[in-house]
Image (cartoon, rainbow, N blue to C red; front, side):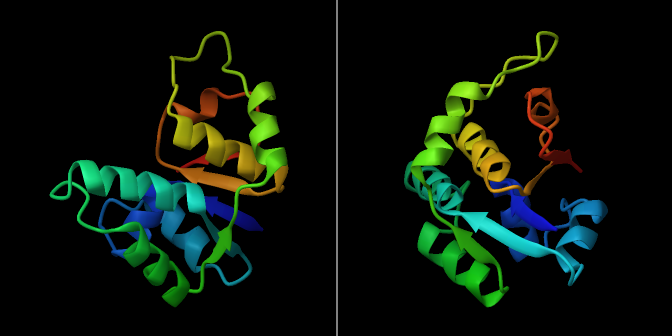
Length: 134
């Protein structure tokens, strides 16, 4: 199975953070799964690092290096990922969620037939079947 990691899952995985849910850890460690990270996550990390280096001590360049060392595969942004944003909707009963990084990551996972692994409880409120909240 192809798995695209949400930014926080990615950061927890590469730092062996105790906040990484066991279910996520098992999926990442399963050799049958292909693990992907997005340049969108690199962008998100760099923006947060520049704004608050104490809260986000890792740079995008460092994160990319850790991901490569871990054997994770990079996914680039394609036009079709951007175009998919138009069809991404929230369920009527779902709480609001407007994070542009998350929305783009979801679209990448959906378009590329991947499962999007997240620990964000707001994510399952989208109209796509590719979100796996752990």
